[in-house]
Image (cartoon, helix red, strand yellow):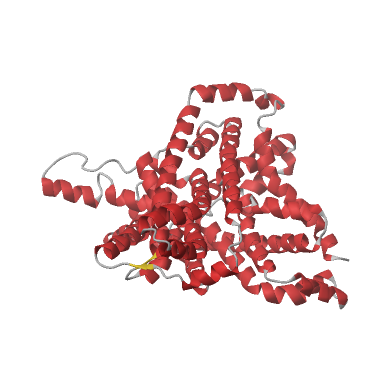
Length: 540
């Protein structure tokens, strides 16, 4: 029996499981059942009460973060790509360090240090002998924009740096030989070439902002994601939560379309001669105050997005080390590792089946399934939660004896399902990139020698995909460890993870205790950052 026939049924099951959350969310608008007939009335009530605030806050936050990541990401990418100054090689990889920081962890760290009762304001009040607030409230839209900007700018930095290094160097050199000054070369050559990459990076960063729950909930910001959880958990109105999730999904779809359009504009051939000239073009050397400004531009984001948050979290570890929950830390870490391990194994297996079927099959079904799986990472965790719990509630009301609600909410089934919907895309992208390096002629040779589909996968593809498979499993593992919105709702009883515990302790203003799981998440997040930096350095 061929491999495609063996995997046909599992692929259909995964296809349905992937689409179910989205279909269920959109199904909340249909006028079926007693709750469905109230959908229009609920929308009208939200339009007159909370919806304008959710929309305005979300748009305001996205505009501020978009502007921030463009300024920081493009500025740092231009500095390390187009100029040469002391420490440039170190900054090339160090600027990736904020990727290891979950946004909600950075929010906890800044709040602990900058809030009214924090050490900074307390010291300033004592020094100036004044009372009241010294600095603006950190828990605000501006504070959230600050956090997101210095955590998410690497998306723009990575894409803009790639675009400038591959396409701008030889054109900048040609413009210099034609007598154009540095400012004109930057404005006319470098920035237009980097524009599609910047647009794609901004779209990715804003998708992370829309999917966030930890920062918006902790700061008390009324965004769409916070509104979804409030409608479901506080107001007990699942239809309102589903309709808010639909609006959020529409915004994500718009950003995803913009990102794919920008990526398509980035795919143009530069020619063999351009690549040779690019290797001859050298960055502009800087010295004196110009080098100092370039150094400051690169050092400030690392300081704000990685160094200071880590220092702020290390402070309570030193001050309150006798009161920290060291005893339960092992239990939280074990729960996180267990869920992450199960999900990474399943995600890699599903992604391998999808990638192989899409490669070998001439039918449109496997390719469509692979494309849909590749879009799963863009679906916010809040939408996945609502999309899973809605049909579970319907089935539970229809057939209570099946106990579907128990299996989805009281066991690891529901949370692993949600993880797979979101993070199979990560494993699939890694495996597809590995398959892209395997020529199709090897498959033809194996087929001519009489090797079956399973034999081709095991004897030909697997030895060449080991590194891609390991990278896929590791990336899924790290993403699951840091995931908060879906874990907060769907985790089994007495199975708190490091992300959930950090959120709960910070919400209870026990920021010193929250530092332990938060720092553990940072250490885990450093693993893919190190892998990415090594990959980028190997291509130089």
